[in-house]
Length: 230
Image 1 (tube, helix red, strand yellow):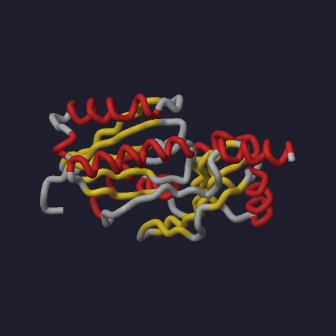
Image 2: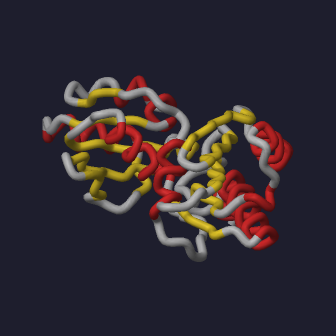
């Protein structure tokens, strides 16, 4: 880019809370928590990671945040932190999605063909986006959707089309998804911070918002109870 840039990436949309920093193109990644203690772990983890590189929050040029789809509470924590931090220190804000981070990392690792990025949506549902990994880069061929493992089993098992699958949704529904003979599983539960930092170098900055594909669990559970009692 012709000048030194300090970029922070925040990942909170899965069970894992993780951060990464790129200092003049050199990346450092860190998992802070794996049990959804995102609120407690995130800011101290950011400060510690930056300090290890001789940086403070004021040294940040860009903040990249995963805006989902993923866990409702995690998305809120990550986005609120990223927005407040960017505003406070005058850094640019860049949004990325959990599904594209998985696809971008597959591409960077040399995989080519059709890929499904699958995020655990809980309640036996999945957030799924389909990508083509071509020689020139990554292309989304469908918007992210709420699916079930059975949906994918029927659709892809019937079509017979080969595809790579990755994401924490694969781990959550591995028994069903591994029954599709044309699926190749590439284990990876955390959307790629390395990909987020790479995208943060070139993607246009601007406002970000959470990518909600369904109601939060609390809202959904309230709706179910209301209907049951009516």
